[in-house]
Length: 253
Image 1 (cartoon, rainbow, N blue to C red):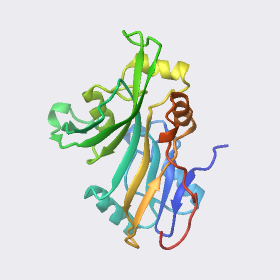
Image 2 (image 1 turned 180 degrees about the vertical axis):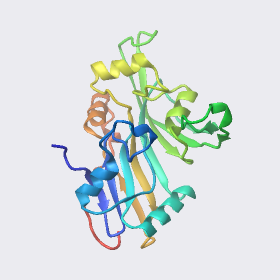
Image 3 (image 1 turned 120 degrees about the horizontal axis):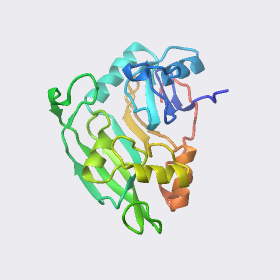
């Protein structure tokens, strides 16, 4: 039996949920052959209709918000489009990443329907900061030691695969990224560290509540895979705090 989704916040207007890694948010052209989607699972769990307002890539875990009525959905979609939503991600990358940097590499859309040459490059900005690092006495690549970093990423724009592509272009691909990463490091984490997934998690969202106007600051814990890895690497101090109220229903947050 599939366990229920973990609710991070719920009121009369919206609900925030912890999306598991590997689960598509809703039906799309990428969903051929898929039978399970986050939107349907959440709808069935709550017993009411929910409205998507933003997205997370299929392999990414973390916080995602759904509206509970069309007006709230429109307000939240406008907030995301106007970049009034603060987003915080944690990623495990290969190498010792920069202490702090603003990545500003224009990106073409990756929709698979048109040749890339026909797609205009659009502005894409990601603020990154290295929170911690580790060196393992194991040769995974050509060096006798292997180094990895914990990176905090705050995307200022919302391009598809933006964080993954920006970190890869900068030379610090995310572990578990089959498209933009390196296979030998991905296999090492899958086979020896029990992390066979993309190590990218959306751990925070902050925005003005569309009904009350009050600031809503959502924090999402990591899943078991990433939590165990953080503990193994000595990064426990960077684990996001679990929510104090998993299911809170009120008209105002």
